[in-house]
Image (cartoon, rainbow, N blue to C red; front, top):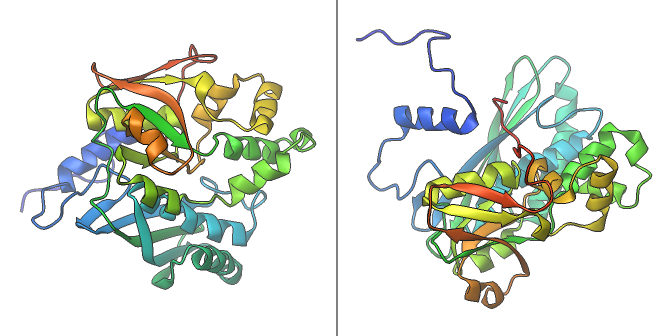
Length: 323
């Protein structure tokens, strides 16, 4: 057998997207019977089954001094359910794998209490999993979902489409800022922003309603400034996004301005909104039955995103695990 690369002998990738593209070259072969593998929020196993996995790591995705164990359990499941929502599907069941560090065993019941509350609210039973010892606490959850139609991916945006988004953006980033800086907690709406950061609500019903009307869809997990370039690359189109058109709660505007940031740019880079962003025909916006805000358009041109509006001159970038 040919020698395999050893530790530290792989490629040093510039960012998370480049890393995933490199890994896909190794394992992302076409598999008969699997409609879609890597590249979307979830894999499509059959015309109606989707499968996703996501991890929450202590010190990276959450901090013990900022969130309770129940908050961590809730969020670990909710972020996976958001991926299911982006595929226009509804959850069937979840598996939970937990790595525990020294002294973490007594926190598992509180974590599972949060998991169970989220599980019941979104009708996604926890049906099994695994526990292992490690150097620190980490939760990895895999969710299987079922779609009623062919799930949308990130590769269907076409020139002439508009880019639209559900809900409002920026509250999670504002909530995290308030947790990190106690002087911000007296601002109006800070408590609501903190709650949204700790316990996001996936757009499962909206995703299922939107699926028949959209050409491409994904969830906003790493921030529009990081997520939309992925949609543009997958679809091979150019996106123009107006930061002044982003739907922002007035509480986010106040916190952003206190931090001396343009509110739209702040929301586009904050991440963890878990709203849905999509490409669709202009006519479908009013026909889909879900309240949406149009924030941009799809055009011919090199694959990428151009931002306009206040803050567009900043180097806009959301979350990246390699940054």
